[in-house]
Length: 418
Image (cartoon, rainbow, N blue to C red; front, side):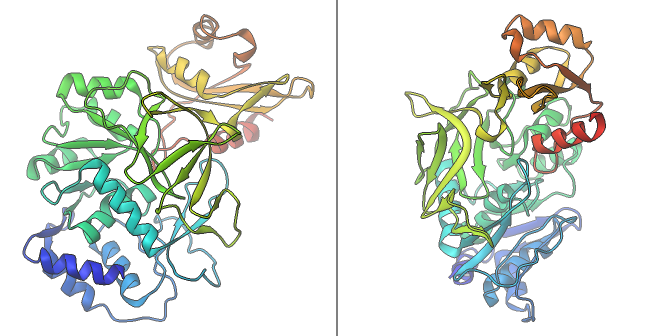
């Protein structure tokens, strides 16, 4: 089905630009890309594993659609999953980010992929007149849904950059004015502090991690560009989108449900997502959190009167101090308010005193002395929530998906200090 839809898109847009690859300087029209895909021979591969950031990634996806092989996009350093068989009707496998534990395989049908891109294009107003600038990973769920699928199933051109360096992204925006730029918060922060900011962008999107308010407000004030926060997950595609034309008043406000997506709060306070884009199952081990068109997240949320989703934290990240539970995000938000804190991550570790439960650890990228940060928190939080353990980190750079893994930094701290 998807390959036939792609062929129809290619015929309708035959002479228009489909892909520009900046690293090679080559361009393909839709007709030329379709011709290259049609010429791909069959193989004995049961699983197609596209990698990289060139047109070869795109052709490998089309080869999977053409020959009915499940597609599993991979980062350059990821091993091919050891999967003996696949569920029936599965067209696509995603590796979750593993930001909260071990990565899992998520299995999707063709119809679920199609629903995801349709919801994203409808909600964000993506158009063939506004090329997508591709600087994020094509293998990540965000990049695949916002860059690859709009190209193949909606005829939206894709410009593949060779790096996210400010000068190159600025040049991409100048060469393709009125474009759409999906990115992650770390990239928006870097570009904001650069003279090579991509000013000609029509639509700016940020996902993968919470978008800091200072970046959103700073970009809007200096460049007049509103960055739209986007919340999604490998298990269900797009969840919520900030449709507003002005900067948000609170970073925890992630937007309202995408077109075609229904959001609700479960009895445990966690967000549940229902839509035609929700994946079929985890594979090979199923989980009740993902079944029957429902993805039950571990995100603790409020639904505000205007239907905006407000993130409170994650149920599996809650810190328990002597029976009193709270979210580490409540500390991180206040730490980031300090002018000398660039980035931070907070988590709980088991205390040597079982009665106490957890001890709070704060890893900070900051020029401020720890005592100054403690006093900053004490003025705004109860004393029992103040971190007992502090770790100064030279750089808390997010990974390629724009995430800071709490599980990873917890493991690093325990390995080093316990």
